[in-house]
Image (cartoon, rainbow, N blue to C red; front, side, top):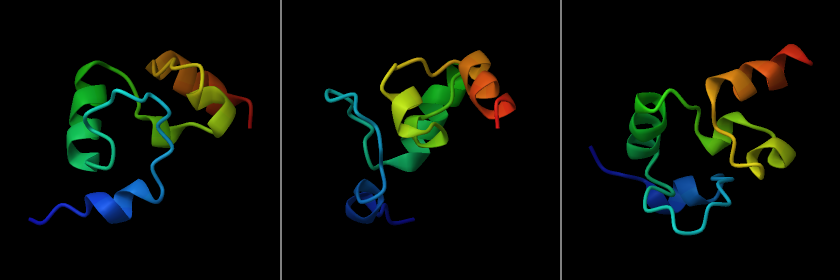
Amino acid sequence: MECRKEKNMLRCNCTYEPCPRKGICCECLQYHLGNKEAPACFFPAAAEKTYDRSMEHFIKMYKKR
């Protein structure tokens, strides 16, 4: 399977600059889910900037809706 990193980068909202997985969605998902976290793209911009990727934070953000 061919990675579409350049295309993915157009919508990647991760602001963590040293991240080696930016634009490589399969690696990003595997990494974060393996750590019981959600990736940046699951969060609105303001919540993403907190770098709190916990599932608890994710659930709290979407319960408010």
